Image (cartoon, rainbow, N blue to C red; front, top):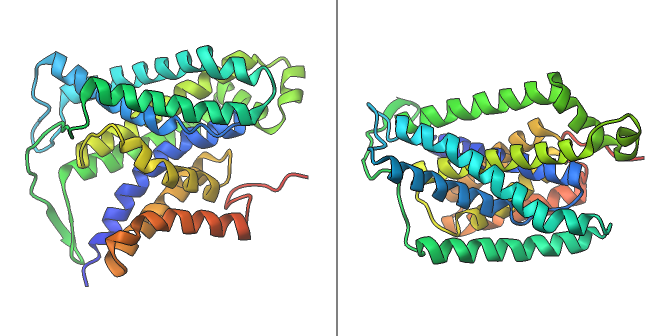
Length: 298
């Protein structure tokens, strides 16, 4: 039996985990579920595609489908996606959060999600787009598993980003401020932590990582205006499974979701893939609502 589904699940879980980091940070620090987060992924991916087109160069570099133009485009797209998140917070979410009604902010994120998605479809149409149409030859690594150079590069990039996020939150002053505010907002304000700076850092990090996850999907699959919507439920399931507020938990939850979906396709059928995230989400809420790395509040 081929174990290719394990690699496929690992790659899908990496994309889901990166996107889930933004969701878990937003919920733990800003105290609301941002349903527009998936659209940050799509906007960031299309921004990278537009920058690559503006550079006028091929994305290919050696054996990889993406080279220096796409790397530069990714950096620019991360900055643009972070700017989009900050503008959306300034124009909408911050004003609603000030009223202290979180349910209104959640509903506003629904509206923002629909508006961003429709605008993206209006600008770029609903036709799928691609960074590259080159076909790579997968290299066998044993046990029936084959992997392409793009997949190796993206897995390494995911590992580096997750390690960097862990170091940032655990070692840097800004990261400690974010963790302190997520645990006790009132005490953090009394301690003199700049709340506006924490909020800005949350949006920037979440949107930038969503952009990276979207570009990963664009490189390995395709680019569509609805790409973020299709990953929204798996990302929420991963954030809840790992424990709200835990970055390692979000990544581990993403890997579990990705492997579970891939196993469902392998052993049950592709039509059950979308149901896996929902089943896991309901099971976690019933059995361990605080998630794998979450702590029950007293």
